[in-house]
Image (tube, rainbow, N blue to C red; front, top):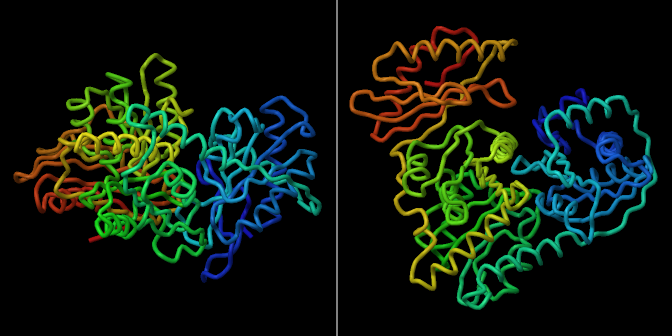
Length: 498
């Protein structure tokens, strides 16, 4: 079995939890979950300055088939250290963070068993305290501690915690308060929700319907860790096509789609067109623009030039384009706020959206609530949710090319390629570096009448260099790629797709 330390995936832990796919050996099982939980208790005790016997820890899971096995391991690992454990059952990732800040519960820490949108045989762990999710360095330390534990825990005792019940009540209260001037309810609103057979079904049953919304046509609300209908991922084309069809088939006012553990969401207008990627960034920003005039929106590195123009020139906000990785954008927004900027929103094109007035927590249900409130108000005015992003232009072409790196020293090769590319861009007519830039090499191009931009960067975790290209002209992306290939072709260890 692989080294337990290799289960780290940025600020999360992810691994293969079930057999069944050829060539994929299980590396995250009950015993390893127990060792990791024990290491987390040790880390947490030091973090909050408490004896392990004083700690209260809550754990929950999404709909994955391996959840029960890993939950048993976590309980054993926590109890063997003398700490008390509560079981939240089927839960969302944001709900598990809220377990640490809701006064009624006031847990010292929490663990969510999830691997987001990854295939059915995968699973993972996310960790929280009242200060938010753990950082990459924290996970590294926990796994280092876990690697030294030969876990044999057998006994455990847990109590149940209705985290999601209270969390849903908070979401209902937010909607009621947001709609106070029009009755505080959702009567007359038809909202279709796609939970992707993950943990998001509660949003229909415990949030929208109790407030009077018509949710007929909602789909895949029942938890099923096989994910039989489509990938539970707002970035997935098949998933978005499915929710778009459900909205138009049911003549709904709004569509909402969640990922498996509900820390990401996207929307669909009544026209059946997706509000995702650049559009969901624009919408999330528009929802907060009046409360934070001139405020800053921190995004990941692959947002479009058109979005930048919309944020700065239409909404009057500041756009800080940063790096890929939801923890990166969240941490940068928090840092800017500490420096005096009003960085009210940190958001990735993947749908991770974290508002400053929600603990900088990437919470798909919180974003969905803001969208629902806005859509209900706009309907009273004879408008749709699309009115908030009116004026946002889109590139004609947008694509991502993933360039595999076959060298063992791929990190060094990638750094060299990026260093050389900056020099190359400055020498080529029609190319201009985008500055400031915080990840990889981003350049604007004007080639044979086509305008656009490209970004070459190193993957966060894999031996891959993603190349994003956008163009305002048909065929422009292909012309840009052909030019880029003339530069990349001289490097050994790169596999360039044709």
